[in-house]
Figure (cartoon, rainbow, N blue to C red):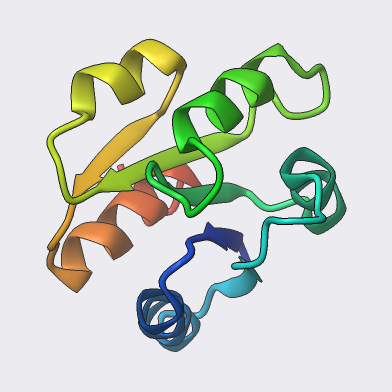
Length: 122
């Protein structure tokens, strides 16, 4: 069973996404508090197959986290989907994202994207 890590500061969104992914059979790890936590360390601890991360977090920039992931030997090959309510697809791709989801998105879009990234769908 593939594991998806959600990095999101909106509690409603993280709850909905977690439920959706769980219903589809994925293991879900959530990170919604960022103040005293090293996000990179939390990703390493969770060891997800796919990371779904919001670009605009309360006190952090998701693109900066992604850039740091791509420079970390233990994280650089992790599959990452970035999401935002603004069209940041170009910036996400430039930073090393494997895919981008524009909010709001349909649940099927997310599930198809995650399955593709973990190799469950062609």
